[in-house]
Image (cartoon, rainbow, N blue to C red; front, side, top):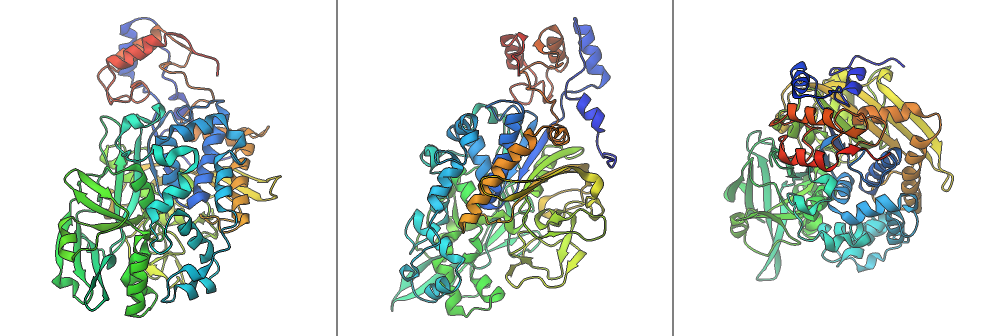
Length: 640
């Protein structure tokens, strides 16, 4: 198979850099190695796209298959070279599970083969969702919701999911997310109060990694709360968010993070400060109160809060303007729906110790709400459902953008699109990164991404749209061709009969300037897209077919990479991870199978430097603790 020339090191060079050249004996030889420019393994970075349980299952399948390849129960083995991880929606669920939950990791280590059984994670998801198609619409309040429930059948299980987590008369996404995603294995209680920056709360393998969760400030005249005034009537309190630097009215990216020691966190607001205008029903926003959230205000919130906000795909339901401008509803219906569904986005307030999420906004005046800078945050997929943009911004902040290597785990939602003969069809979430666009300058909610400048225009974008930022980050000419397909595979899952299609792309890319994420143009790197698809693709299991599709996806990724004769697929995984196809050995820097004098020489040659791969404890500098680790493991490596 022929491939395009890499924009970074060649494939041969990258494999050579997996293990630093052998140095034998003395410090002078170590100094020679250091002066020769040889380096430890290049880091890679991981983005996990959105898509609810569909995305979560897709990502878990790939990780389980990687753990199979190294025959390990430790995800830190295949992810040894992964330095930074970003996620959104189901991708953020996945990162929370593997990065903050010992219970989930233990299950993944011990019960991968039983993952779809009743005791496994997917089995528990099935137990929770089966039968949700039947919902009694009469329990909903009036004002059109009952009619909506009875007429639009697909909403039936959505209301059931909300009801399962609490009071259907006061639906709250954060509580719902915790109940449906984190209840198995006691994770919900174990994660209460844990914050993104609590490194000691993470499993050991994850303490040296950076975690980024993508959301948006969803203030398109959002309903914050209501007050009842005499005579009894509804008086909604609103907030409107605007990117102060660009005047953008909705979908302002906000990044929440917890990074390893010595690392720089991404900006909370990579596009610049955020202005919040507070007003109440019947007022002009211009007569309200305006406050500002700073670009670098604290970006550490609770893990469960960040995860819930990152997956609040229904967050736009709190927007009065969405009902009025996009759907054409009357002011009365828009007010009623915005008030009832306001907590499908996650409330946030600023305190002396940083931001806090909470289940509801108190019934207070708009002036009081402005004093605590209340706002609503929701699914970052309103902007970029891959989370690649957030990861690129983080790499730029850490001066790692040039020569970047990013692995994107992206379940391919249909239909796939392409713009010219010879181009590989892409899921639209990925296509938007290259500038795929609709004529309408608004985001089509069904697409799950954002228009770019002007390539491959769509003639008929949908009407359910909201204004948001441009998403394109790569040059349009980088759109992949068949030469960029590193591997593809198709199989039928025996238990369900579902067809699963898998593909790995390895695409040389160059960035364009993107002010919303403070990205410069001209930085070259490589995007590895790991994709999988089935026919049933809902992020929430709206039918038994979805549950079967989740099981099939998880099983078949593992089957494909373990299959005899599938060396091409396994090699594509090894290349993307920048790892040799054997179990890594702690502090074996030269890869000779034991920790000895040559490894000591290599460590000393990088003393005092930030050298990933030699900086064993990940504190940003090669020093005494790394030397102590090498001496503690001195001798032969265990057999993989």
